[in-house]
Image (cartoon, rainbow, N blue to C red; front, side):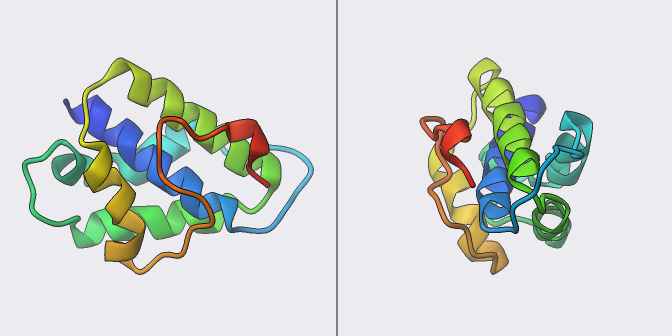
Length: 118
């Protein structure tokens, strides 16, 4: 369940990243995405009522790190790959941006087309 929560958080982070600046080459790694989102696992897995401060800080850090279009697309693909392998509460994942005060330009969803993120 922890891994599934991580991936859900990663999906959220990708959504946040989509709002960031465009770029040429992806420099963000899947391990960075996961590391930033691990604190959100307890919330996305359903055991916590709200995301922790560490979760929100991770989401904000990921948003800041995903400055280019390739970064955001890579993060999205990482999140989707992980989410496909684990169970998570998609409704909770979609609420993370608002609860953490982060603006995103697309919905946090497993159906997001990562290649369409700019």
